[in-house]
Amino acid sequence: MGKVIWITGAGSGIGKALALAYDEDQNTIILSGRKKNQLDEVASLLSNPYVLPLDVINEAEIVEAVNQVDHKFGKVDILINNAGLSQRALVQETSNDVGRKLMEVNFFGSIHLTKAVLPLMLKSNEGNIVAMSSAAGKFGFPLRSYYAASKHALHGFYEALSLELKDTNIHVTVVCPGRIKTDISKNALKGDGAAHNQMDAGQANGISVEKCASQIKKGITRNKSEIYIGGGEILLIYIKRYIPSLFRFIAKRVNPK
Ligand SMILES: NC(=O)c1ccc[n+]([C@@H]2O[C@H](COP(=O)([O-])OP(=O)(O)OC[C@H]3O[C@@H](n4cnc5c(N)ncnc54)[C@H](OP(=O)(O)O)[C@@H]3O)[C@@H](O)[C@H]2O)c1
Figure 1 (tube, rainbow, N blue to C red):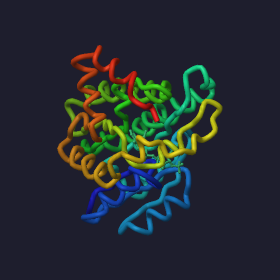
Figure 2 (figure 1 turned 120 degrees about the vertical axis):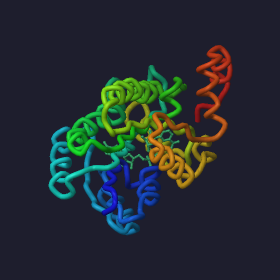
Figure 3 (figure 1 turned 90 degrees about the horizontal axis):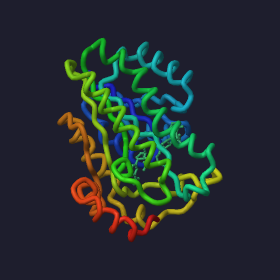
Figure 4 (figure 1 turned 90 degrees about the vertical axis):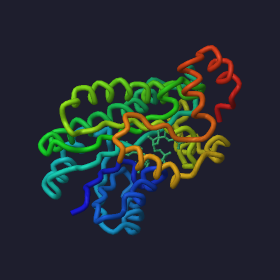
């Protein structure tokens, strides 16, 4: 029997590319997200799909979904918390409600699902837990204040979890993509909660989802704790780490769109 791989945000972008990349060796791919029509479309491209609609900010839905997966498969080998939502608005334009929504989807959605799946992995003493952060989980960036905060928060949580799991065969990977060519900027929220609805130049010039998915898969197979993926923008992670003043000099001059 192949692996059971659960991907959230699987109806589009990086999640869809990951589903296709893992469609081999009789793997079962559990596809989650809110838009069932998109999940069904991805399912039609796979050998062993299992469509499981899920809004990650709904805790009751998470419990129900995990029960369903436990009942049907009895295990999860790889959980990829990929669902996410970006932001395109200045701090002073972003309502508190929009800010909370970004934290709910990107942070609480990810950690609540992980917590609910963890008992299954502890039972078999194996698994890979993957959190989708961002280069904006490593440094702040204009128009993405709450987004960056939500992604930074993932690093603290998942580092703590990985240390707690040090004596198990469960591995935690945090992925930090730079700019990947998806609809993330179109779906990003403006300050009033409306969709930004624009393909930003940074996104349009990003690397392909196929390349991104292949690098994520390779990193998970190697049980890497962090994976950085993208073009030149990934250099900023290292510049921020080693020469913070240079990071500020450059980041102030980069077009945030
Ligand atoms: N593209 C990039 O340049 C980039 C860079 C760094 C990090 N990332 C991260 O990569 C991940 C995937 O993004 P993407 O680029 O592939 O963009 P995307 O196509 O917009 O994908 C986001 C996915 O998240 C799902 N989602 C949003 N809210 C959800 C909720 N409440 N419950 C369940 N699913 C939800 C969406 O599906 P539904 O609308 O159907 O729910 C969608 O499939 C995100 O975590 C993002 O922050 C992307």
